Length: 221
Image (cartoon, rainbow, N blue to C red):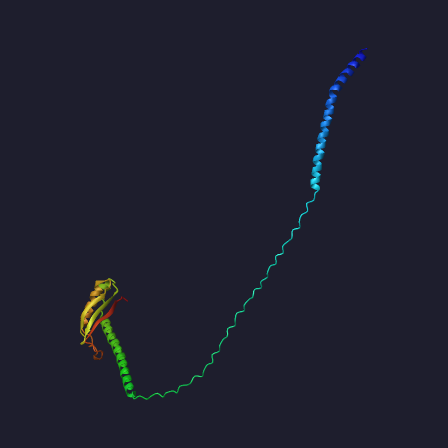
């Protein structure tokens, strides 16, 4: 009995649910169909658009013809060298040198020049000889001072003087001193004691021979 009761209640509840749910299911089915129809229409339009082939006009390529310009290289013009034709030179007739009467004058002038040079050479030789004699006389009369010798003083004194035509010594002076007064004083006394040299040779034509310089050395051997 209990089972029949449960079965009845189940069938009643099921029928109620079926009545309520049936219209819902039908409405849902209709909506899905409409959606499917919309989808199909959309796809059809897509296919029709893609299937249409667009005919493109062929693009004609323009052929640009380049003009080839050939460069013309100009060759340098060859220089025309003109050869100069040398004209033969006319030889001028040589003039004979005119004889001048000047031979005697040239000979006389040559003699005078040679005589002057001879005189100059002789004068120079005579001067050297005279100065050599003066130096020899000074060296011969030189005396080493005793005090300087004892103290072992050595040195050089350069003395200057003038000689008159007769050979007299004047204007005695020292132009380069030694380190010691004894040697300087001895040199001054040496020239004063000599007083005279030989007379100046007449060939030299000197009345006074000025500024004769002679070095006097004092050395111990």
